Length: 456
Image 1 (cartoon, helix red, strand yellow):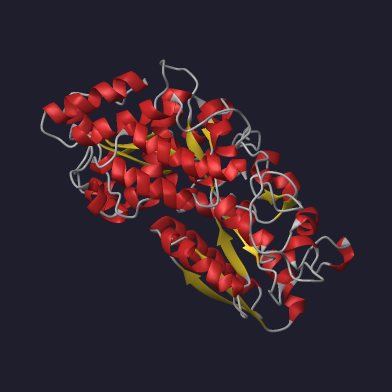
Image 2 (image 1 turned 180 degrees about the horizontal axis):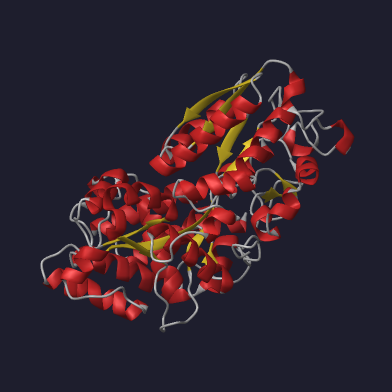
């Protein structure tokens, strides 16, 4: 939808093959153990009537702008409902992935959690009966009208927990996101360059910047996941959106040993060997790389829109942001992205109705404006987004979202591909960047994981 709620967003979500995981406990409502699929009249939408409630919430909104909007909304929710106390546990994305499954399987899990979409996390949690289906709440609160269908579908899991993108709703997301190209306006100008308008110009600029003694792309991959986004952007540019969608979702005949996937791997490895990426990138943390970019070390930074608020603080108007430039100037834009992690209600929560009211508060129009004011990109932009100056980083953020959405240009994150693909892909990318494996060996490693899953 546009800023007037007419932006057309097409996030690809489709059926894929089965996943093996624990079955739901006897007597559960399908795989989930608990469900909001009950008459609307039995759902309480007023937390004030719930008595004294403590909501334990786990999220990964630890960065400056993300933390600021959640902290503000939590404060406002508790002021509106003094009987509700929110106990918040915030972890980095990597730490959340590592610890959430254990927390959900315990006897006293959180009430509300952020869960990553796809097979490794959300589908696995649903299969194991750890999350509550939320279709009833969607009807009561109008989430099915607030969000485009494509966004809701990304948080759906089928009744048999074998597919995502279809079935019951298990979460709602606050923010839209895409992997873009941040650039230092001052550095770019000092080198006699302008923001590139095509992918060919961008890659040519990398060589020029290196020749002039500057670092073309600031990049830290100690946390492993940043390389998913870098490789994903290159793959989306070279192979096109349909190939990436078919590959990730298993809906076509695409394979990881396709020449296009190999070519994208060659480009990434060449960038590393040519000095276009930070030397020793596999030993540099993601946050440290972002701080170095903000300090003027590196002309470009390829990462997600979740970083915009943190970079704007130290860089101010020197910060520029654009989607990866298209093949031809003014042409359709393709990049990796979708929406932020889903906020979900756990099946063992003692306060599911209060949890749902909290999620509604986190995602309503007021929340959208709070996200905009703190430098974030709301999945459904509200009035505050319309007032952003066009040339500001925040204005570029929303404008990029509109451009991508208008052209149906989003490709899904590569780690959605199989339950084990995150670990397989991140390890393989580190070896590729470090020069320990060749591009064909890299893609063969990915295809082994991918093929085994889909053949099963």
